[in-house]
Image (cartoon, rainbow, N blue to C red):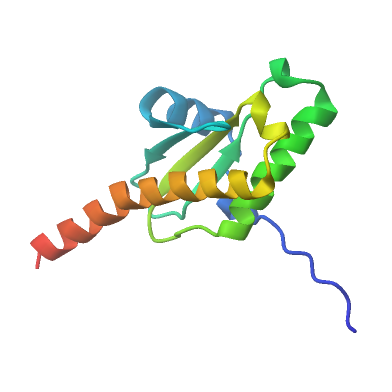
Length: 132
């Protein structure tokens, strides 16, 4: 058996700058779920789908916050992203995320991403059809 290949969450798929997070919070739309709130905003730049995570200090200490972040990051990584739409997404977990089953978390992330894809993927498809 060869060396284990770690699957990572690529840097170009992550939201990293504070200004980007602020822009999504102030100008974006929200999707509420049982264990998280998802903020999203379409970008004009032809970059791929980017995801960021914010976990408030009110939810617990560093260990607890990092566990939440890891669970969310893995759910997003396993789901994959539609890189055809340029959208910034910020996922903000609730305290209940810690005790939720991982499959529940995956379902909530999947539902949120499908909503975003319907909203922006279909709009882009319609405009391409209309311009032909």
